[in-house]
Image (cartoon, rainbow, N blue to C red; front, side, top):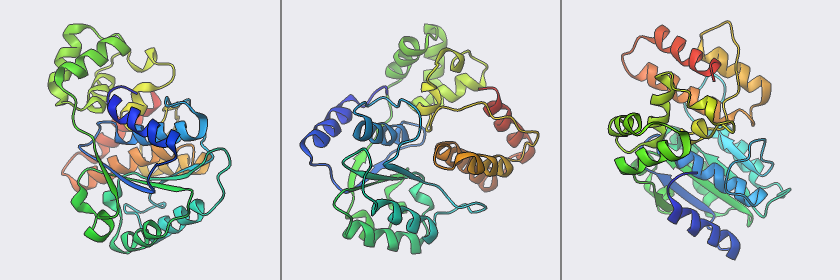
Length: 274
């Protein structure tokens, strides 16, 4: 992971000392590494390495909306609760990550509040949201808040040059347009046809943009919902971050006035080319 070294050091120290809290809120703008930080923390707790090494984590559960839904409801909370009360297999903690916590319904937030108030001793719950005000105050008041700021333009440019081999001219231009959001910078390079992903064999770029390594997905359909269904059937846990990313894109397309067929085609082609 690139950036947020102070937070990495702090969380490693908390884990080593056994003083991690039970519930956190990671908040900040989109595509700046909140999800990746949570994934890296889960990897560290289970495998002792901060860098995501790929594969399924036995003691981490990533909450995503149920099939056909664009919100996180009581069913998703029940699944998370059931997972948290199980005994950890390889880690000292059972970790639940709620990406896009902004999508939690009022009922789901009330249910999560009960879990946060009386969690299992081995539980750690991470809510990820852009805006803390999307959670109601009784729940919000019980979360340890961790703010993820944007990077400086210089930091984004340096990361692209050092870790991905992008030229200084190109990295500076992309950094200027990314407004300090490294995930946006990487997605912009990928959409521009840069050989960025081909040069990162462990899928760093896509994980940094907010998910696991993107595998090749072949589909005759350009329907995002069908693609989500295929991923769920293949392995809902392993593909959870891909599903979350697609659900976010699907939600944004329906929320904003865009050419939906064209957007679906572009997103599907992007996934299949990586």
